[in-house]
Length: 120
Image (cartoon, rainbow, N blue to C red; front, side):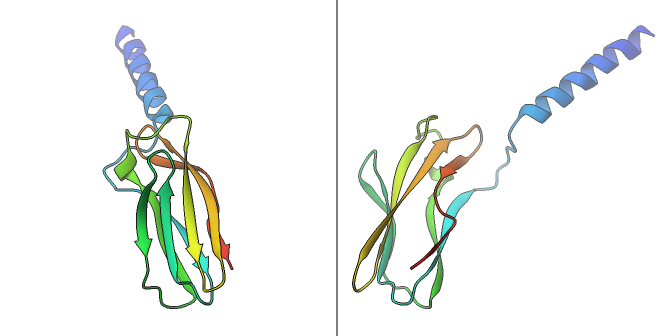
């Protein structure tokens, strides 16, 4: 009877730890945005903390595109409270700016806020 008691505790502890853990795996996670625009000339992301320009796209074809904002390359480099990234879109007539907030999650970089789709 005593063996089953300890076995029950052991199973309960495994369930608690696996239920509380985020889905940690070796798959590289990226965050993207879908953009629908007729005449997009340029798209890029700026990490505001360092003013680094990331993921600059200048050869854009078609009217629907998916652009990378940030990914797990920033794991262990972002604040747990979130860090703003600015996504810029340039058309022949205007420059658009959208703010995204990313945090350093337990296993992956996580998006806290920002659009999933932008239509110009």
